[in-house]
Length: 360
Image 1 (spheres, one colour):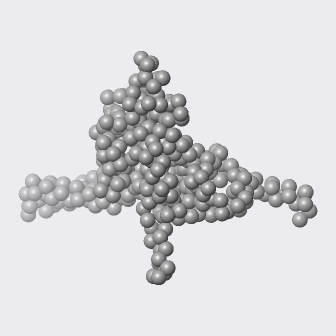
Image 2 (cartoon, one colour):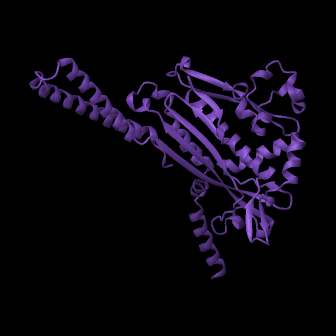
C-alpha cells in the first residue's frame, strides 16, 4: 500500500533545513561582528552584541513563522442503509462498514431508547423540502447524530488500537506516557452514546451477568453479552502532558507536546454514487429503490508546534501520526476499499466473461 501521509518525514527535512539556516545566520552574525569591530569607536561593544543577538532571534522567528504548521486531511467513506428494515448493510472486506453494522446491531440489542430514536427519526428525514419556496434544508435528525457518533467511536477505537500497538515495545519508557480511560475524558464521553454504552463496566450491564461472576472480569478488554451486547474497554495511550477534550464545535481535540490534532465527522445526508455494477455484483442488490448510499467524511486538522522543528527530543513518542493516518485511510476510505478489492480488474473480467457467454 502506498503511504499517502508522511508528515514526520517532511518535518525532519524541514528541521534540517532550519538548522542550515541557523548556521548561515550564525555565520552572518560573525561577519557582522567583524564589521562592527570597525565601528566600535562609535558604539559600545555591549550595544553591538545586544543588537546582533536581537537581530539573530528576530531572523529565526521570521523563518519559523513562515514554516507551514497547519495540515488538513479529509477521508471520505460510504455506507448503505436498507429502506425496508432501516438497517445498515454490512459490506464484506470494508472495515468501516463492518464495524458500523456491528456497533448499531449491538447497541440496539441493549438499548431500546437508541433503537427508538433511530427508527422514529430515520435518515430519510434528513432533507426537508419546501415546495412553496422551492428550497431544501438539512435536518440534523437523531439518526444522523447517531451515524456521526458511531463514526467518532470507530475513529477513537482505531486510534486506541494503533497507539497501543505503537507503544508496545521495549524501547518506550512508560514514564513518558499517560493513559486515558473513560473516566478521564468526561467531555468526550457525555456526547457520544456509543462510547458511554460500550465502555460501561460489565458489572452494570444485564447482558454480561455470566461474566460478572468471573474474578478476572476487570481484565477483560472486549467481550460480547448473551444477546450480542458489546463491551470494549477504552484506554487511550498518549505522550505525557497530552490532553483529550471536546471543543465548542464538538470536535475531538488531542493536544500533545509536539502537535494538536482536531477531528470532526461530516455527515449531512448526502447520497453518493459507487462504481458501476458494484451493488449488483458485489452486494447482490438489484433494485435501487430498496436502499440509499450515503457519504460521510472524517476531517482531521493538525497544528504543528514550533518545538517540533527545533528539537528531535520526544519524536519517538509522536511519530505514530503518519502510520495512524495511513492505517485509517486504508480501513475507512472509499477509494482505498475499491483499490483493495481491485474492482476495476473485477469489472473487466466480468465484462469479458459476459461477452464470452452472451457474445455481446
